[in-house]
Image (cartoon, rainbow, N blue to C red; front, top):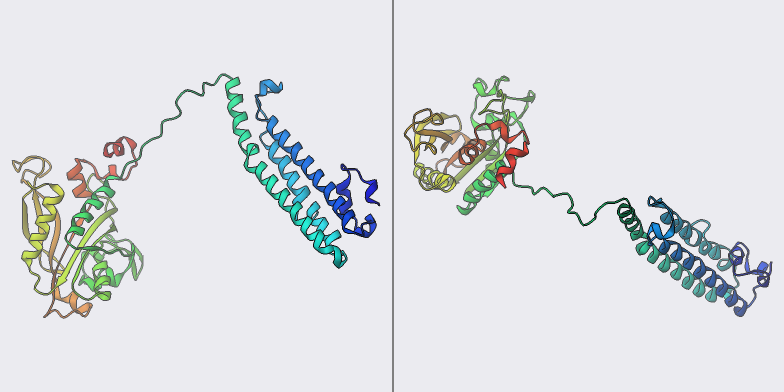
Length: 398
């Protein structure tokens, strides 16, 4: 095969032959061969661009139905890319294998330069078509077709629903921000907890009712779904020396029958402060400040003696009823007070478990559910509303 026998249309067939078969023995003939290939590439690119631009016209102008195969242009573009740039049998690859590799040393430089220029032009122009009108055309066709079918594209689209923060998340964030301002940091722990951290390290003995499988979700004999966030107190004291001031927000799990005020999955915030010379007065002042910041300055607080294995002495904290002004109502059960959280001074047994010097350090701890304060603050009558995903309920918290 001689190069003079090939038209521009057939020039791409030359890449299947080596230069000796084509009669190419000097740079001048080689340049003519590459010039013909460049013209053929530009013809193919122009034809593809014309084909793509035709799809930008109105279907009515072209006399074709409004519904057009969106993949036609993309398929043609891919075929063009494979023809010139395909890794196995593309024209550029064939030139590399059949011309460049066996070429004499005096022609290799010229072939390499012309080949790189041809490859760059093919890559750049095909990429422009891929990223240009050919990609946008399908959307334009679809819009034009819809107009032909009578769709008024000036009408407003579907209204986007504006989301909002979940009330539990909102309450958690409010609680966290109040304690951040007091110098507390946030610690977290695993939902699946060992029996040691969930019970034993917190001075909860084996015969305690809380350890019964009627109250606790046991994974196996040594692991449970944590019944409170208190285990994080132990984990934190094991890795941190006093002073310690932390709060622990998170989920807890208990075998409660779901009703208006109980759920087997709920949220808690635990608090712990350990340092020298911490007293019950510090605990009272901290919680009084928190409850007034969360519920409002009009709220009164009351501490009642109680018992928890991990604190001594212990107390329950009540707030004045938010609904009746302490005159008595159904919410406060006619007492004028609403129980809100438990607290106390850290039991020295816990300090021994984490190797704190109980003669030097003292501390207080407290814990509260998040759902109960949220129900009181936002006026939610049923705890189950927090978990049902009812948009009619959640939209009220935008």
